[in-house]
Length: 138
Image 1 (cartoon, rainbow, N blue to C red):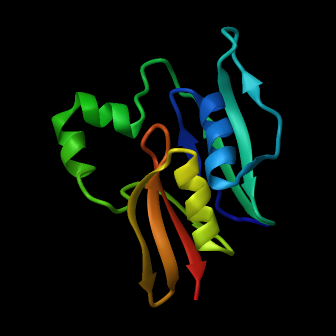
Image 2: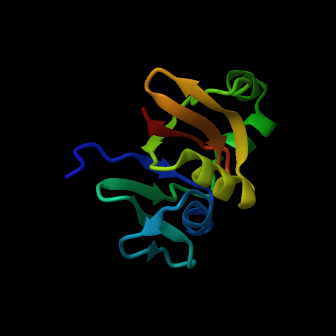
């Protein structure tokens, strides 16, 4: 059982869930919940045997990292690097195939692929600018 579960907020959690499944190989593993306006407010995504990420919608005022950076000079500065600022690390069995799938779906590759002592990795931003690091362990 996974003991720590990341929770990410999206401006459009339903579109994010669909995109993350297509681009990064997640699968929806639970029921989607929606509000009175039909907006998806919660979705469970899984990856592999034990990986779980929860997606949510906080409010119409929320801005994802990409839009926040477009509207805020300070946010643009702290995102002006190829590293994961706040994000999720995912172990994958075949980094090359995973990277090709992510690129095909339009992920923004920020770094890599590159060799590290712990394995091969690349970093990408999703459709709202959340950053993900994918590693094929050594």
